[in-house]
Amino acid sequence: MTLRFLLALFLSLAALAPRAQAHEIRPAYLQIDEQTPHHYKLLWKVPTRDGMVQDIRPAFEPGFTLTPLPGESVVNGFVLFRYTLTGERALPGTVVKIDNLERTAIDALVEIRLLDGTRHSFLLKPRDSARLVPKAPSAWEVVTTYTRLGVEHILAGVDHLAFVAALILVVRGWPMLLKTVTAFTVAHSITLALATFGYVSLPSPPVEALIALSIVLIAVEAVHLRRGRESLATRWPWIVAFAFGLLHGLGFAGALREIGLPQGDIPLALLFFNIGVELGQLCFIALLSGLVALARRLVSLPRIAPVAAAYAIGAVAMFWVIQRLDGMFL
Image (cartoon, rainbow, N blue to C red):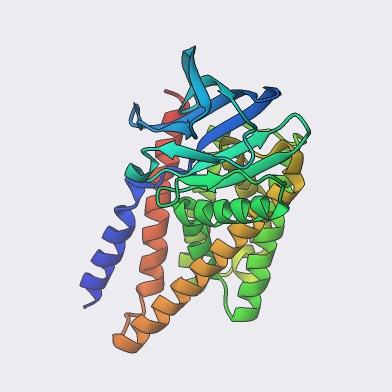
């Protein structure tokens, strides 16, 4: 029973390792800027995967003419296309669609900037690939769009979830867990905001490597705790969570730069992206706690299970460290 449990636990985590590139949520991005009445300039960014780009493109109602411009380019894993759009009428009140989006697993973030200063931001998804452009701006669009992006980002960020899982292994009692998670949230909110507004800037590769290393260190502390050796991380886990949360916030900022921010609503988008991250994090903690409680009711878990979990998380995180360090020097 114990051997089967340990093997299943390790294999399930190891299976995530090759896929656990940080910030896998990379929506396509469509920026529409009105240059003169009914004449627009478009930037269309499509994420690549394994060197391939999906055949998706913006589409508009009859009466609009979309003209591709030469000179597409590849920048940071995105292919950039540029277009001009000319319409017989204004864009608000018409439908914007992404052709073939339903055949992919990609979301598309649309940002529209009009001459009168009006801005619209909304998220198109494979099952909802068209949207009517509102005639009046709505802050609610920004709230819902960036909350959803925050939730999706954290739930797809296996490295960040692994850090949270490792933290749970070194925290004793729900009051301390709440304090620790709050400290982590406050810390990554600080650096996310500082990086977004340009006060802090670090290159992404070393940040990602250090994030993976932070998981390894917490996993090691979880093993030490089960062997009777206490440290700062086990006595005051909220301090360690705060320190490493500052680092993880820089990782979130890198993802947010890739996603893009509505220039007229940066504070609102930043706030609700962070709220989305926190909601996703709390959902993960609740799900993990529920699964552990269910497992304890159904089977007799071995006493070594927490140590095995810490070793499994640490092993996968060490793989990420090596992988990311290797990527830095290629």
